[in-house]
Length: 162
Image (cartoon, rainbow, N blue to C red; front, side):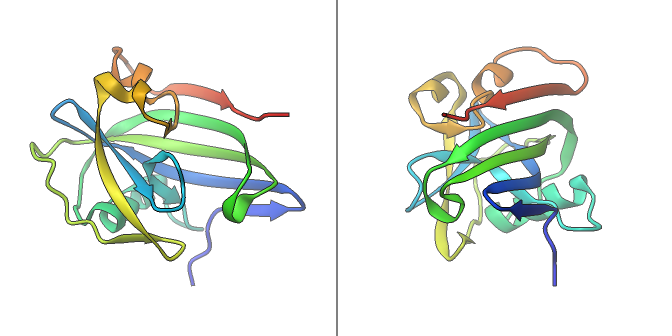
């Protein structure tokens, strides 16, 4: 049995996550499903004893059906948010995510057959220049993808509403 690196304590929820930034032809890949009204990054919880690199490769393969290779670690993201629906309803959430830029393959073709909590997950190539038209998380993605970077960036996002 795989154990995710995370815990819940009363109404506090924490997760260690590995996520991918996959860019092909001016678009970045996001996931979505029939329950949530937003798009979210490709990735998921790191398992106990698993490296973030192994976790992101596993998650990308599970979600896209494609074995993307890692280019480099791009962002360490500390994310604070409240969830108002679903499994995390009423939870005060804190997530630390390692975002890896994946090597482009030169095609947007995927072989996705992904489910999250029993719900079909779909993959969406969102144009980077139009990301502000979509409700997508993490919110830093558009600014990040439209600027130059060297090394690993540390980004803190606090979207808690009181």
